[in-house]
Length: 199
Image (cartoon, rainbow, N blue to C red; front, side, top):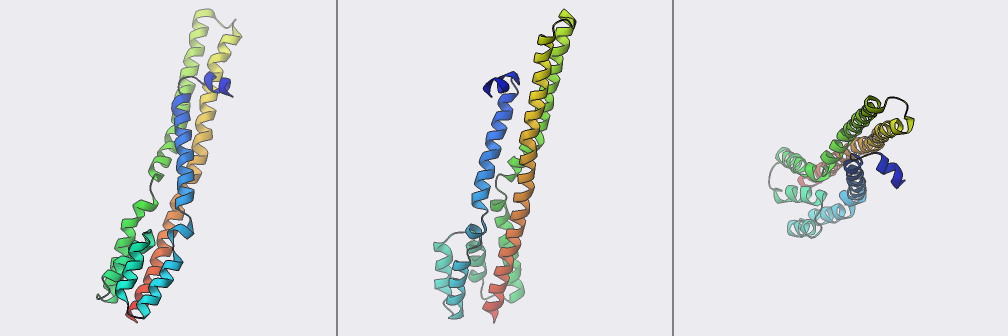
């Protein structure tokens, strides 16, 4: 395997770095974007109980003690509980927009890796073909083993770039869609809380 990577040439180093970063981002986002971690229904229920008894301070304390995306959005609504319902919904939407970068963290980097990996692979292909034609111009086509080195470098880097880019693009799209769904779900719960507060 190491010999295979060495034959890919110098561009296997940035491709290797891209693959390590991509795996790290996928693992981190898989942990951070779990529904149970982002949408804390247990905290929401406790906040609702306190609000039903008109214990605004206690509800705010719970949100501050359990910092999360949902907790911060709910806290914004509770802090403005004296506003009317439409204003509260605007405040919730604004708080949700401010939390979107937290859900989208590192996804830009993952998208970049999915875009540049095939380009790095293509660059390796060009270098490999240059080496192949350099051998042909110097020694002719009578040395197939030397020609094979340049061709294998070209093919290895191309394959490596695609192997990194395809899963990175799939996970980028998956996590982006999941983050959008989570924001909508949080806003739905927050709007229900606003309705309950105003009732």
